[in-house]
Length: 322
Image 1 (cartoon, helix red, strand yellow):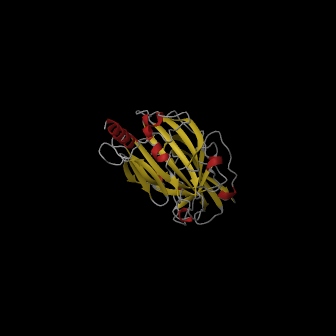
Image 2 (cartoon, rainbow, N blue to C red):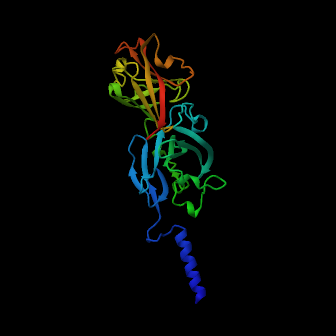
Image 3 (spheres, one colour):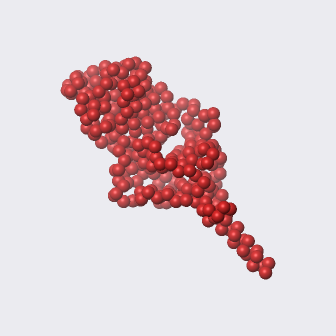
């Protein structure tokens, strides 16, 4: 009789430890599936819908000590996660890269970046990136280091029972549906915000004629890189995103929310009214520079395209995208 009792106790322990049930008789692991992506996540997490252009869904624990977001971003023209994704040189002491590595999750190439945020709470940030369906997908964890410190020799406790209540539960079960239905659904890969003229537009790599957006010149640089990043927008047509950039003054801020690097870049106007006759934005050769620069370009005179009107800005701060 004791023999059978021991077997029952042992089996109960195994089932409980495996996460099938918890002490309240409820499932510890829940499943998310929107048809495009699917993954498991701890049942104690609170889920909310995405809040911005790229965010699909987000999670937090009951104590609000960490946040996890899952997002999708359109790939800019000519961009490759494998070849182009990197930590840009524009950093400050509050946002430091600690490690980066590549590995495979569910047959997909994954790119992991681990940052230290020198905030009052001494938070960490972990980003996992995937490229599929002509889109970029990412999982971003921001919170205390406790969730990230438990690592095996291989870096992640991929199948550990003790790891089931961490962010790795989501990461290691992440699946992207490989169908044409979900290709090219997302639009902009970043946003530009210019408070002084009350402007807020998506940044795309499609065409300068795309409505409700400005165009990133593919022969220019990306946010935070040591070079001239160029954004071009119409002055009078296609919703006229750059209607009032001639009114910007030295010192005004221009903010880029970059969903690819998950960073917010703040530039400051250094000069306005650089007129280049007989030149269009696409024909300018954008140069490398010692510090990141951003050029805002529109046609001139208004309603004509005889010249390029350019606003020059320089990068003044970088912070994690909240």
